Length: 472
Figure 1 (cartoon, rainbow, N blue to C red):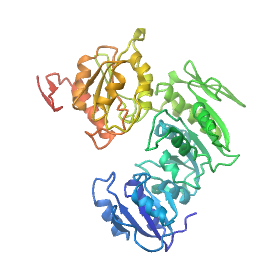
Figure 2 (cartoon, rainbow, N blue to C red; figure 1 turned 30 degrees about the vertical axis):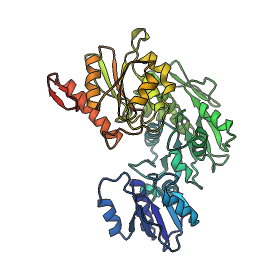
Figure 3 (spheres, rainbow, N blue to C red; figure 1 turned 90 degrees about the horizontal axis):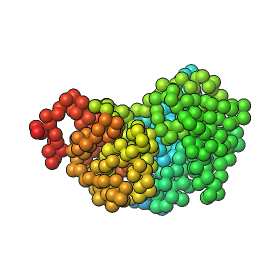
Figure 4 (spheres, helix red, strand yellow; figure 1 turned 45 degrees about the horizontal axis):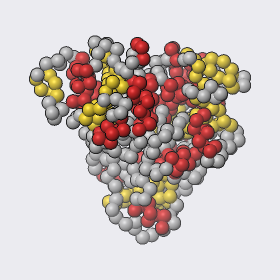
């Protein structure tokens, strides 16, 4: 699909995705001219390594050099409207995303996963099921393992599981997963899209190249939104839902039930699984549907799913101290992810609010208002952080008391002092980033460290107004 030997190729952006694309192009004999926008980069070492391998690296503010370019490969670190993208378009240089390049080079069957939330969890579940059935598979498409990083060795695999975002799908023309999964389309604006319709259309590109013998595994509510926009899904469709009991796979009092032909009845009991909440029920159903499409035996699916536990920073139980659970959900980068975390949190007897919520961060134009009913039922108080704190307080204060905290550590200590047995302290930002930290992972690690200081008996300390621990 991509014959780049002895041709000159542009790489726009040198985050992990862009560097992986540049390295793959060099391996395939291309001459690489890359633009370093310094996005998501901590050091110059990877850039120096690219130069040593023969790539020409230019500052991101440089104009595109004159000459003929066979292709331009776009990193997800650049967004629509970037001057580099506009210049490439004006010069009619073919533009593809890093995902498209990796898919085009990979020589094995692929599974694609899209949607607002749950992609990492579902991809990991599917990988565990495939491993239990002795199939070789890797998860790719995210920053830790870009699509181009695994493309050269994909011929030795049975499947590549691609995690995709709407912005990645936007720059695909040939991407065609044999099994495509659309988890959900949350009512939030994400990834720079001005309208929900634009966001839905971008996600629908997951299915555009599928054939009638491929599989499309789609959440019922997401399928409804596709059909409202007359967006076609040519593959065989299997639906799933935690709320729609007419779906092919649905949730009924903790049981995951199938009504698929030749596969009817209960498949899995949530009480036998380590993950909790309606959102994880949907992740499990999506994974089961993928396994069914790939003809995996149910027993080879059930055991890996029962023993699966979500990774760090995803509704992670850090500790239980004096009957109070401390939950690290630092990966919750939008309002819908927070909503799912609240629904999954341990309820209090009698249904009273029992969650002390820590949220906030950089304001990314999210709509916080629709959480109101859930907040009033579940949250005792919200501790708000970052530049979005006042905006969130304006949206939430009618439904739950709100306090603006200076730092994450201060919020953890204040929540811990207030919480009693049976309560939950939940860190779920609902924002794409916290100004205090370079990444959500670092924020989660700081939350865990603060909880550890409490659990280790550091009761003689509390954070001062700068969020530092000082003696009482």
